[in-house]
Each structure stands twice: as C-alpha cells, then as structure tokens.
Length: 380
Image 1 (cartoon, rainbow, N blue to C red):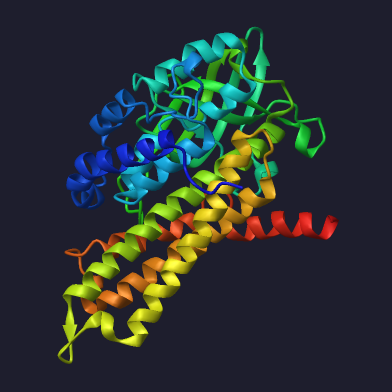
Image 2 (image 1 turned 45 degrees about the vertical axis):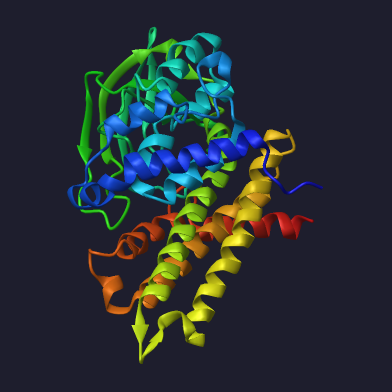
C-alpha cells in the first residue's frame, strides 16, 4: 500500500498552485465583489492542460485522470474556489459526451473545450427539481430530423458564458419514471434559448450561474448523447464520478482556511501573548487539521479507485458529504479565530465562509449523500 503521490502528480499539484497564486489570487477579491467571470484565466489554464484535464490525450485533454484532476481542483480552490470553477468546470457536461457520446461528438466537442476555444455546461437542475432528478419537466419532441425542446433550467454553471449545453430532457413521457429521459447537446446561441445571469449569490460569485429557458429550440436528431431513454442513468453515473471533484474543492478551501488561521494565530497577540498560545485556539486549529487530513484520504482514494477501474461510488458520496461538512467547519473556525477581523472584507476568510456552504448543496445535497450511503449500508 503506497500513500505517496507520483512525481508526475507532485509536479501537477505544484503547477496548479503556482498558477492559482499568480492568475487567480490577485483578482479573487475583485471578482468576488463584482461577480466577474475570468475568461482570460480559463484560456491560460487551458494552455497548461488544466481544462478538461481528465479527458484522454487522444481527444485533446491532458489525460491525468480523476486523481490528477482532483489535485488541480484542490490547488485552485486553495486560492479561489470561484475562479477554480471557471477553469475546472469549463468542461462541465462533457463527461456525458466522453462516456456516452458518439465518436463524432467526442471529436467535435472535447478538443475544443480542452483547448479553451469553447466552454460547456450541463443543463440539469430545474426551478422545481434539483435533487429530484426524476422530477425534471423539460421536454424534447422529435419532429422529423430535429428535436424540439421546451422547458426551463436553473442554477446552471457557465450558463451565460458557455458555447453549448448538455440538456437533460424528457423524450419518452410514456415510459416508466426513470426511463423517460435523454441527454441532448444544444448550442447556446440556438434560436429560442434565453439565458439570464443569476446575481447576488452568497458565494462562488466569480463563477457564472444562470437561469435558462428553452422555447421551441430545434437541434438535429444527431445531437442525442448516448441512448434515448437512458438519460437518467447517465446523469446518475455523472454525479458518481464528479463527487470526488466536489470533495477536492472542499479540501482546497479547507486548507486555505487552516493556513489563514495559522498565519493570524502567529501574528496576532491578545492579553500580551500570541493568539496561538491559547488552548481554545489550538483546539480549533487541531480539529481543522484532523478533518482536512481525513478528507484528503477520502478524496484521493475515491479518485484513485476511479482511475484504477474499481470505482467505489459509496466512497465518492462519502467524500462529497464529508467534504462539505469539513469546509463549512473550517470556514466557520477560521472566522472565529480571526474574531471581528474575520467579518470584514480585508480578510479572505469571510469569502471562504461564504463559498463553503455551496459544497453542501450542489451536485447532490448532503442529505442526498446520506440516502446514498445509507442505502448501500442497509442493503449490505
């Protein structure tokens, strides 16, 4: 059993952190305040192979697998989670094309995204259905050689900046609940597509999030991804493989919280002593460090197993669940260590605090992860 990273992984990790410090760090505060999407940073990251890094080299990616991609996500999130999402989620939705798309679709979309020429988005969540994937209502009706799509999507990452969506639609309404859905590629500039940026988010404000409307949107029949009627199962597998990435976001953010707290505890004095000399502060720092190391083990192992062809999706759900809890705990502790200064914009921990909560919400709420893990335990 070997717990050490390979030399290649160590180089990748260092490169990602150096990039984040140089390109994301100086703009993080401004982009948070102004809700700015960093398109230039995405292009620079693509030139270094960090966009769609999990995509095999034959389709334009870096071919670093799930663990390599997790390391990139971790290090970028260690500096700015919103900026990280702009880069690592620039290929969001392409997982379906890689796993289920035709060879023609892979050749058309994957290299374009990995090179930074195009941005993708997964249009899944709806205004009245998030965790309830089987409750989606967007419809796609076949009319000759085209699908005609009508419906609404909500909280779509990259929604106003992407070039195309992979849209979850009902294509077989007469089928049983889970057999009604399919996934269809829709150009973002197709007639009938309306995109509205969601402003005023609590956190990850640099990441673009949108509400979408599809009104009689026509796309070619060949834009179907995978088999018709298998969309629900394709989406479930998508979440199974991306949960370690959310855990990696939490890992990077939690590490940032600990590092900021350690700096402050060493620099700040209270009652004539360094803040770090007080046992209550030491307890917060220690609990943060323990949770971070436990999370690192979960994330790395879940990602490594996917790369080894032995995916453990229960472990991935655990990584996602514990990741959200760890990030929220560490962000809260970091603000408490900083006291009143943790509540003002001058210190980054207030941004970490606001960013952390989304990790318990998107790509499966923490409650959904409990149901997933408990279901496996009870069946065993």
